[in-house]
Image (cartoon, rainbow, N blue to C red; front, side, top):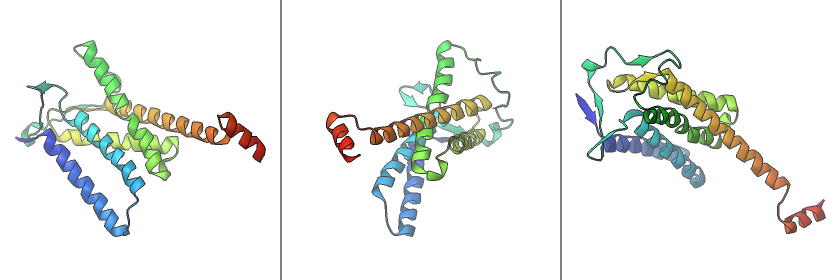
Length: 196
């Protein structure tokens, strides 16, 4: 059995991120600092997703338990392909709420960041499809770890969270456009009226 500590997983993700960003910066010959700052938010988003989708929620002696890989224990895989059937199958109401709210809310940032970072994803359908694809990748990767479960309900909740994130993005974008067209302060209104 191979164990991957949380710190090792995060360092691996950071190493891959830095290598990809540095490689792209070298290939382009320039770096856009504003975009890199926004991409750093995506990195933080991915790091949080890594924590909550791969590592056990419970701690032992205050420490996050490692991710365990055992080739002999992976088969048969733990998979739930029946939507909504096992959604409420938890021992406590706390665990149920943690699953529902957690799977939904952890993908809201992705729904906001995808259209901000990637102009091709600035439609509801494309952002939701990207969120579903990210969630599906996570669920499929969980098949490699015997103590994780690949669950259609997680995919549905993650996708719904991404959709909610896009709606927040779209609402904020509309609000910003409206504020640019209709200044709020009296001085701005007078200046706007004078110009028109």
